[in-house]
Amino acid sequence: MAEKIVALKVDVDTYAGTRDGVPALLEDLAHFGVSATFYFSMGPDNSGKAVRRIFTRKGFLGKMLRTKAPSAYGIRTMLYGTLLPAPMIAASFPDVLRETEQRGHEVGIHCWDHVKWHDHLPRFPKHLTAAELGLAGAQFEDILGHRAETTAAPGWTVSTDSLEVQDAMGLSYCSDGRGTHPFYPVMDGRRFRTLQIPTTMATADEILGENGITPGNIHDYYLARVKDGLNVLTIHAELEGGAIRASFVRLLERFAAEGIRCITLGEAARRVADVPACRLFMGELAGRAGKVAIQGEQVP
Image 1: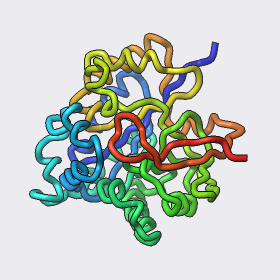
Image 2 (image 1 turned 90 degrees about the vertical axis):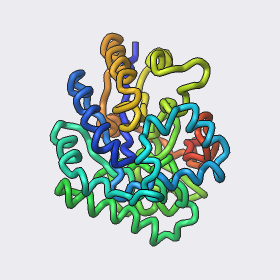
Image 3 (image 1 turned 30 degrees about the vertical axis):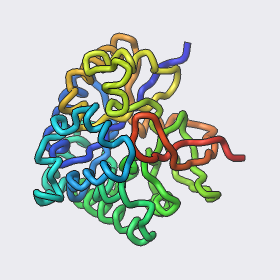
Image 4 (image 1 turned 60 degrees about the vertical axis):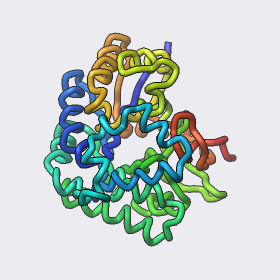
């Protein structure tokens, strides 16, 4: 019988998520002896500017209401970059990044400005894409004393330019999209050389409030969908480390009881062999407002 493995990817989007959610997750993961890969937003928290998506992304308002986002993220976070100044994230909490790494977790770059990347990447000139990752990389190195080996795109939003810049950074792997198995991306006819490890499972904000799924039973949803081999689950510091922390603890308890092993994405990358090239495209995904990077068919 094949082993069931879950690679845990933690997206840290906000100032509050870094300050409060990450320490909570470090405590819970330590309790179960589990390591994960944390991707930190490094620059300003402009979360308040995301309110524009109500007008630009179909389904965004419904998702906000379904997941109770204002209470989950907090009113201050919802105002950063608009009525309140945007606080700097990593520079405010360098010890959180250091402690995450010191505890044996992987630490990577999520972005410089999460909202800016998520909402405007398709319109970035290449030099701005490079600048966003360059700023994040410099801050990362200043705090942790070494270069980042992995990045993960905010909102699973990519472009050929972002993939090209990642190749130039000499990364070990990235986790930019949604899919079924590790692959090398081919986008708009261009082939890139940085390994992609896609998220394979739905995220909590995509499924909560749908089909009777609640914080009290979401662990059952995940357990029923863990397949043999590698699964990749993305969680968020602001949710699983905050508003639905108890739900995540129940999930870790059930993983342990069922013999489902949790690993980092780096370990997953080291385990893969005979990796195919696959098309990567921006498309619709159930539960998300706007397009995300999706793994397509294998390319010869």
